[in-house]
Image 1 (tube, rainbow, N blue to C red):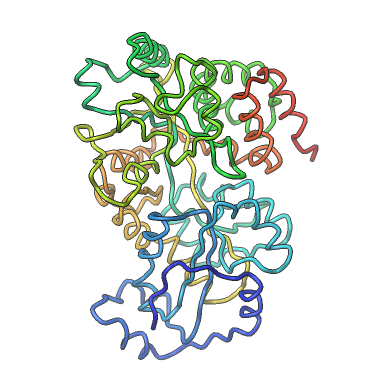
Image 2 (cartoon, one colour):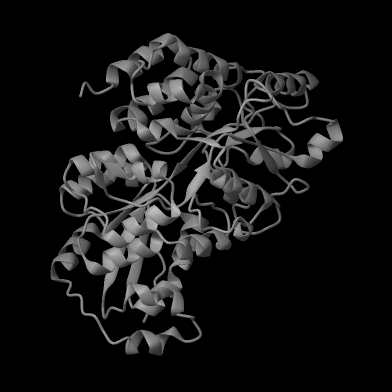
Length: 452
């Protein structure tokens, strides 16, 4: 059997193949013959299949996609299911159109509960099987299960996770210049101003460009400040529209973030003026830290992968390494730990045993430990051993997610209706950075909120 690497699936061909695909359970001889030195014990529960294939689409690309494919290679060998993965930056924009036309992949790795809800409301999703639900009930919190649920029906288990609100920095620069890790938002402001006053470089470097999703990294800033300035209850009210998007509390968060992102003294180190945030890709936005051209970069735990864009390991992520990160601090040093984060959800567009076998595996502690061990990511699966993570920072991140005392809130834009969280909020960030008044931006986003 060919061990699949991610290749391009052609949607109409996939749809036609899905119609004629016949699943045949086999005795296991084929899988046994091809397993070689692979220990198939952990995969026996998923069964064996002859000639079955499953297509998966998502936003995950490049090195992270390679690692994703590697995470299921033993599963393929032992079950006989061939998995073909395609990653695309346009997945979020295209998946509803593909689903409506009957051309969606068998599984879509959806990065937004709001998008999951839109697909479920369209009638395109297959509810999760009992095996998937059993895994989620065992390995995930009720909150995470709810993110994969729409209108009372459970559609998808969580996959990977991220903690947002990390501020990346150079430990050697901090040591050399005597900078202290800020413990409050006021101390973060003071540190930023100190770096700006020294005049060597702008303190912050930022990249907001992401194709049709340009602006989303800016929404992460707003969400972090909303949670820290106003607490989890107000954050929840904002996300669910119990308070309007143009509420004064939201304006306060925008203006606080604007002290950095709309300030020529603060950004865009090593890149250009304020306007270059919109054209600088989020993947490369933090890299000027490596050249000493900025000192701080706000981005999630998954950004670890981007410090070595060629896939090497010359830039280490450690408290004594090339780069490390601290969490965006609270208002008061003794405030409870509150973090925002995100995750993905493998939804199914085709009802088949092999599809659910793949989804059941992806919801297991076996898959989560396999993928975390390959590096660059974390999971909120409670069966994950934090020590399997590839860096000190990711070990810490998993421990934060597993700590029952942590106040965790899912990325707000990902929970909002798609017309807001994946459209007007992103576009509003771009308009705002381009000079539009805060209140006008908030009024425009509020007007886009669906009436039902």
